[in-house]
Amino acid sequence: MHSSMIISAIDTHTEGMPTRVITGGIGTVPGTTMAERRTHFIEHLDGLRKLLVNEPRGHAAMSGAILQPATTDDGHYGVLFIEVSGLLPMCGHGTIGVATALVEAGMVPVIEPVTEIRLDTPAGRVVASVAVSNGHADAVTLRNVPAYCDSLDNDIEVPGLGTVRYDMAYGGNFYAIVDLATLDLPFDRAEKDRILASGLRIMQAINDFRRPVHPEDKQIAGCKHVLFLDPASEPAHTRHAMAIHPGWFDRSPCGTGTSALLARQHARGLLSEDQVLRNDSFIGTTFHARAVDTTTVGAAPAIVPAITGRAWLTGTANYLLDPTDPFPEGFVF
Ligand code: PYC
Image (cartoon, rainbow, N blue to C red; front, top):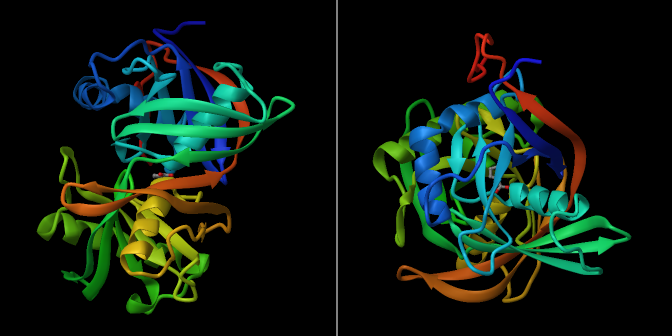
């Protein structure tokens, strides 16, 4: 066996969406906060992300989470979220995958019926409460970073689509929320190519003309996600298709997207204070969400979302890089 590195992983999926949880082989990324580590990783180590998510080790909708030592005194782990579009500040399905892997691999002290795991992420502290029975992680409730609604009823000119109306909300990443009916497209996977192409055009126009920036952390900026709401959605039971840069759909109901949607439903007065939002993904899997606290982000009113979903382990692996491999960063097909 010839390899310049051995990267160990526990592969998981959260309601259909993969998270490759990297448990060893990368070392500690320099930085005193996870936000600093994310910046260092983007500037100096991005080839490792590409190696792990691109073909042939990954695929066009691959995503992962690199475990790191915590950067706070009481944190269990730090996490860097990797996917084909880059390094996210925060990822909900990834956190649920990480928490499930940590419990089932015994990488945290496991307490039944609930194991609490404190994670440091580039977007801030998140807490995963894992429902455990007989050593099995049954479900994870993630207390996310504060989510807020940036703006409602924005109109933007999108080449090829005309004027598109959207709401902009943040739940760990920025989400443009668009009703599919405004594009005259059905909520139907048979139309996924047209929905995805529209999503990519909308995020491009938003980033060109109304790029969102987090008021408390300028490193968190830009829109790489468009949440297309099924017009048949109800205030407390939504279905959506999540189009993501550079060209894929979230298979899970998207934890940070569900958080942003929850903030938007509250900003629109569509949910009562502690009402639960059921949010279904494009493949029909479900997260449940509710606001467990209120706060502010910059000057904006914000909520603290709790998102519940499930993940399953799918494998363990050691990823290698042979020095003669012509694709040391994989490739995009
Ligand atoms: O679950 O937060 C999420 C997420 C972000 C991108 C894909 N999934």
